[in-house]
Length: 220
Ligand code: DX5
Ligand code: ZN
Image (cartoon, rainbow, N blue to C red; front, side, top):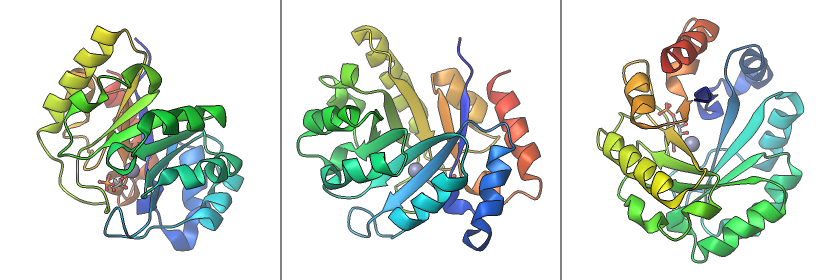
């Protein structure tokens, strides 16, 4: 069993001290940097864009996991590859030609991810699961950090795990939103491979310890 991964969400970092917070993640037991890109159209919020990601990748020494919450993401696949993204995740709900989008992401040398909103059933991935490196299950409605975890996520993880096994796929399962030490172990027990944590990590007074404890918890 490969180890379970922790991906701090930079959306919850202190943007006035961004380099400090990036170095904290570099020095921690976290595995990935989770980067939320929001356009104010697909979701009711605007986060940050290319210049900020460029600054992040200048300092970040771990996998760059970009979560695009934008309409028509095909327009920016090459841009995010050039900025140093390792994983590029698009929303199922934002893609008219998802299969083509996944191939385009891989053609740029990145891993391809698909995110599902809380209302989107796992079965929409029946015909694409073998082409997807990571499925990101939203455990809150996308757009904001600090929201409460949606309990139905556990059922979705189990359904997704069943689909992956049935299709012989090698897809990883990532959970995003409201992750804390209260639900982390149950999430990995259902089949999650990567947990995104924003507020829980960055609002902590002992960030390194919080990450370390979470990492130990999910790998215990
Ligand atoms: C929400 C984002 C999440 C967010 C998670 O739209 O996709 O990555 O940063 O934040 P927390 O962990 O605070 O729910
Ligand atoms: Zn995210």
